[in-house]
Image: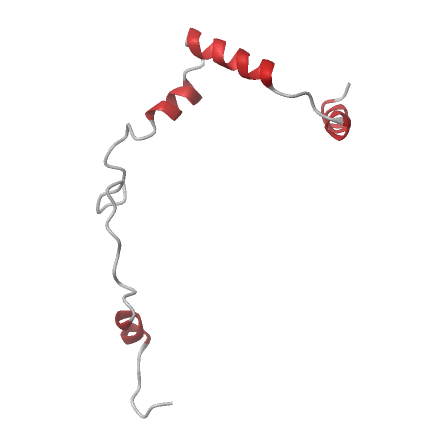
Length: 81
């Protein structure tokens, strides 16, 4: 060890521990600047009454593969049937 005492604060400052990266997505308060950043995803998740979204969900359900043997056993066990 060296004869001088080094505090944790000095070590953090030496290695840049107090530096923060700037981000276009958040302001100084940490809240998003643009609430519409994920508007498409939120619309897809929340717009259940939209006719287009209902048709898309039906299409996705048709495309979903049937569960295999293990998945079938699990569904029967958990859902009963």
